[in-house]
Length: 229
Image (cartoon, helix red, strand yellow):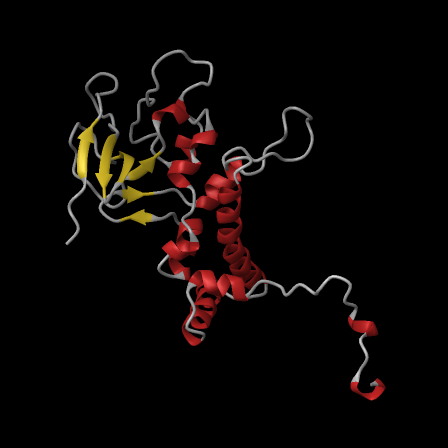
């Protein structure tokens, strides 16, 4: 049985009242910042508690004050409302970025991370990555006033870029199936069946579904057929 998470309450924020106070939770070698959905310094924990980024994400980049969280209440603990308080989205990836493909036990769990948000056992709930991507994945480049510039995924980080690309490959595969009349559960089951029938892990399935690249200089239209040999 895995050890129970270690919970460290943070300093109280604001005057006594219905405030939700973030906790630092250490579990299985990882440290999480968690916002319980009940008020008080040591509230009862639930699977729906929110896994939130480091307090620096909520601070203005020009601030000289120590990083701290804004006051949280039941009124502003919805993901979309919380997003409006985030000032430095470049700090979100380390908290909310997707896992490596091999760390997802199933395609269903991978899709859940996108559509509903991942649940970390005995810790809490992350936001749906579709909402994070909608909020910060496509923003106007302030330097040029043109195009779209994403601001939450690490720049010039090939590992992060590959992780996101691999994750998004399956999301797009499922969304394409849905656009063609399938429901998400059917598209997911198709992929799960491929893994089972081919005895493949999710990373191996990802590799097998990549388009085959032709060798450079090879032109099928000029390849001699059997009758011309």
